[in-house]
Image (tube, rainbow, N blue to C red; front, side):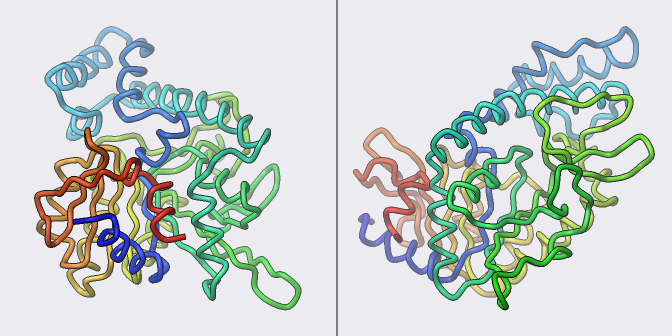
Length: 341
């Protein structure tokens, strides 16, 4: 496997106008926390009451201490509503602190968004829409669009107090033609989504957590609870939109996605099985689940790249166990852009 051979698969993916799937690894290069960082933040900052809260949190802490990642540590455990509320609030603060810093960087110099560079290139051809599916709460995808003056939709009408419209409900036009737009499907919610005390769903572009008495962050934390919350809007409509984007994808570009989320990766597997679409998976370190997907479920038209001591390790149908390529940073989105743009 050479960089040129990897480039051919990457080009096929790019030319197919891939549905882009973003996991936490896509945001980490911008300073956003990893799942491990979030786990550490929760353990350091959570304050539990004696009784049910303390007992439930002890189970989570024990699982984390035994090596479980945060998703596994929280999954299957019945947590008191008061403890869940604390986890949601701390999760919001942990991600928001770094998201706010990135806003200042983006406002000062447009930031260095490889995603923005890729999106504007995809929209410069005949494509009128690009689909982005993400499990992230942060606004990296939105900032990336802003950096290249690309319109985006997340399901809320524009404004300071944003009403839930569902993605596609608001139409943008440039003269007589529909504007080109990036549809961002945030299946686990967003830092700027809230439920009001009177049960309304609104978007507030804020960087300080509003009063818990009046607003609840609409973010779905790891664990079993996330599947319970997704039966209601905005999650239901957002997941349906994400499902359609995945089901109809002509290619996939997965960045920093661990293939641990039942909302997303089964649809990717299904599409690869049906159409054998070009699929590229980029990560600093591919999870075991991602490697299993590539080897057994991605079809015969895939490329997986992770960092290695000598440059990058590339997985493909001809090198299912990986092959070393000396090209540095090939595993990053910047590296992908260098292959296709």
